[in-house]
Image (cartoon, rainbow, N blue to C red; front, side, top):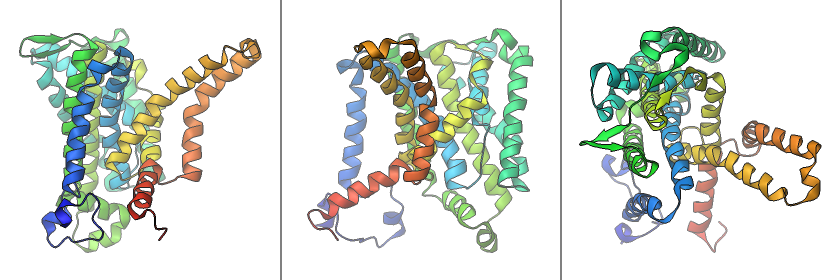
Length: 357
């Protein structure tokens, strides 16, 4: 009977295979499949505004998952994630423009190139951690920003680089509605890979390094190997997300990959929940929709005469700018485990309802 239960009462796992499966129950697996199918119907029921929002969520969520693997699962820190995101965008455009390799192949190749660069800048993680590692990754951010501005052969320098549209079997993806399905494909694949990674020996080693590196080393875990591996995987995800970003816009410029974007990536995983795959997606959705909600809220206030004064207009504009920082602070104070933890509490409440214990 346990196999047919929506929410089994108790833990009946008796094998390692059951303990490491992605979906706890058949119901959860079917619900996830139905969720993907429902998402695929968005272009048919909603207008282009919502399709554009989903595309933004897709490439940011992929890059943010890479950062969560590094920070949330391995316990490292990075303040230069935006630079790797930008490197992936430039790398994919460069591969496609110089070699003629199709965009669909250029995107994963750009991810591999970014992983190699991330591995190089992750070398300090073999010897340092904490604040010192944060400073090292911040230096990587500024080094790559300067590289973007000077490497005309790779980035186009101050002029930027053109990124060709995705071509699928001779069909060019030129509009948002077609690119939506490209994003959905990469989003599902990358999140399945990320979820599966945490079920493997390497994923468990990441968590062991995060929880107590001395105990992990005593158990025979090579700290240097897994710290570098986490940097490479994190950069790979950032490169994939950045490549999708570049080919969606059709043009890549160095001005878009500053330290502010790195802070936004950190905000996504903090708000969603460190060490949670689904929390990463929740945090990304929150961070992408927050400015839109603020914009709509300010628009609703414009119907009042007092809201049209210069002082109020300037104040509301300032509030919109500080909303992301304020959200991060409030989550750190009131919900440090993120939206994923809150979701688990909601599920636990309804699992035991109407009993309170």
